[in-house]
Length: 75
Image (cartoon, rainbow, N blue to C red; front, side):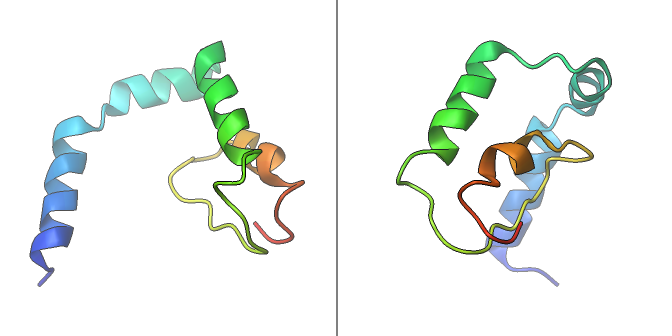
């Protein structure tokens, strides 16, 4: 049995995740330029650092791995 925090996370996921939209964007490769610019600026800022990056939830997409490969030794 999970904690209240994990239950809240599950509930938020069920309410906010849009599987059809995710699939459409994944299959068509439709990412807005602002999304890509935000991800690029985040991954190349001083906000994240370390040797290992655990990539969660990006699905079968290598975009984040490509953006972070110069900042992390292990992804």
